[in-house]
Length: 241
Image 1 (cartoon, rainbow, N blue to C red):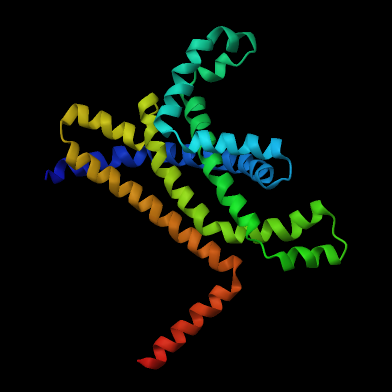
Image 2 (tube, rainbow, N blue to C red):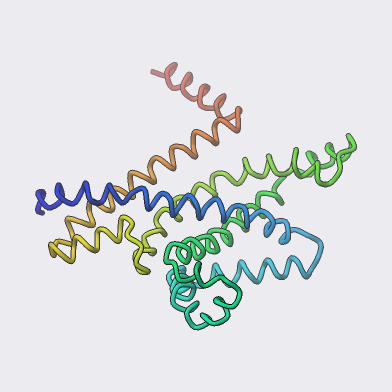
């Protein structure tokens, strides 16, 4: 193990972290905005809306993200005339747009199922109570169903955030120089893949550790009973010692 090579690679890889974080953050925000209406379509009584949302989720979740990214980036060139006619080619020729689009569509599909499950897990009694006080359907969703569903969905959505941070590494295959892209460049010059990828893996590990801790803190903040349970366990553990 060449520690000098690891020391030299570290600042170069750290410099690429903002690119990784931007890819993940933008894709997650756009994906969440798309997932909420799709989740509502999935739980709607309309067979057409539910079927369309299910078809989208099924196709995206059943195909590899790398294939989807290649189709968006390389496949869009097959329809260049169409995209130029509608003024979208300036977007599809850009690797950043294609990477974010592919990541957004992927995370939206997975987030749709997370949110759908959370909505269906909201206690019926809470909804009936909202109806009893005269809340409209929209008001019920905004003030009762959605907040409770988000609390229920947070642990699973935290896993989705971590997966998206790791998935940004695929953007290096379409010329975006994020952490993995920089690692490949360094390896092509030094021929030391183990040392470089150890540092790259440690960076991803550190990012996801921070993400997991942030999700845990948010979950405790949104669920006061978890704070009570933790305090009780701490008191019990201290008493036993």
